[in-house]
Image 1 (cartoon, rainbow, N blue to C red):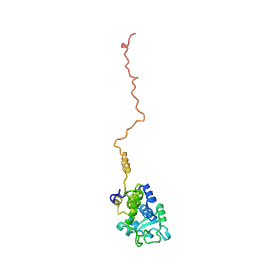
Image 2 (cartoon, rainbow, N blue to C red):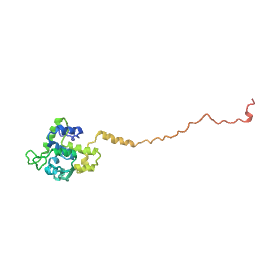
Image 3 (cartoon, rainbow, N blue to C red):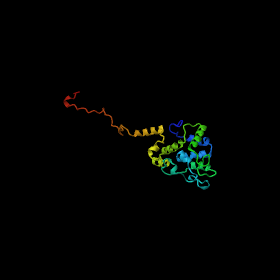
Image 4 (cartoon, rainbow, N blue to C red):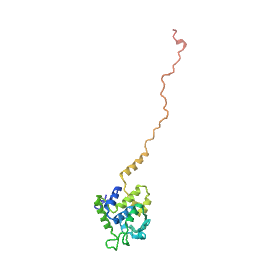
Length: 225
């Protein structure tokens, strides 16, 4: 858990996500910012630098995909287009910059976009409001990628969503729970070191001592009376 900017960002639970979005984040803009971070697994800088045309058509119609431009991604590796699922679409329907601006989340001066540090301050206040500790702007990305992994999505596909350069970088984001480790180890019980005992369907009958063979006495040895 991240405390005072040290350690890994917290993985959010379902109840914490609902609490943050219902009571912690106070404005439609703030819910849209962190909804994009959660439902596209993007970095906070990528979210803050979105253009309005990366998300909306004219008149506030939402595109089927959010486009993260190559020049705004970490390492400037490639442009990513992430599908908009229904949960994100609802948040985007509630938010639309008015008046329409060049950047989706304009800064205070109206000429640039919101700075990622400003978004981090908004999140810290929201978490304090609802009593959740260890959360940073990176928590939404870690939570999304870990959820995909837990659902069995292949890492190569998750990498397409996250935009990581390689799989080793991606794996650092994923949280492994103790019960997952126990489940993995319990699978080894199939590798038994002792062969199964062979049980006969019909056990052999016990020896019969009531019918023993006796020798016939010769005529000369038989009693006379």
